[in-house]
Image (cartoon, rainbow over all chains, first blue to last red; front, side, top):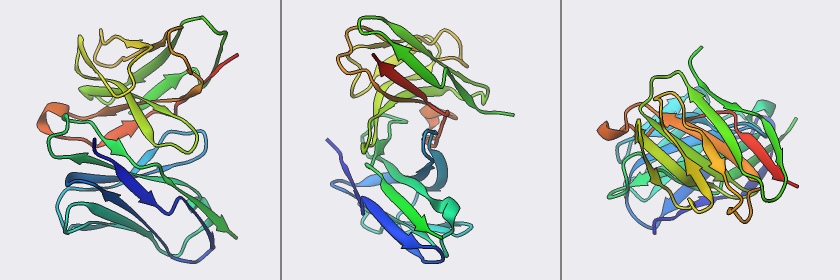
Length: 113
Length: 115
């Protein structure tokens, strides 16, 4: 079945640094979503991408839908302590059941003040 | 405020007992979903429902059951047949699944612990 590889698994950075994480798929995806999850809470949708090559920003966050349709990345600029959490990518592949998302295993971000 | 509520936040259950997790949404979304999350893992789909009185099995439906009698409610029952039920359970909804909207919005989750 379709799988998502998300990397890195974890990151330890200094406040103010930029962050980059990515997801790759073994097959073509038609939609990519990026979520953030705080400890003990549900994921919150950050950015949704629907077109290959699309670049979308949400404040300090920028995400891109790869041209090959098999990858996506998320960048966070000038990180702050509240960026701490787990970031998940999710996608829907062609032929997948409508509304069914496949999730990556997450990138755990730690920020040192 | 529109949103998704799950209750309770923490739930303890004795082995062999069934337990029902509540999920309510007032977003007027047609589709609702249940996921299971284990430490260091992504979310795995248990069941989903695209319309009232209809639901489909996800990837890990064994040992779980659901109902969708009302648009705003999608309760999940963890039965005694579920061999490893201790996990964090997340409910989600999306606007209009049959027209391709896949942006899912999540509730705060219920942490179930089997003693």
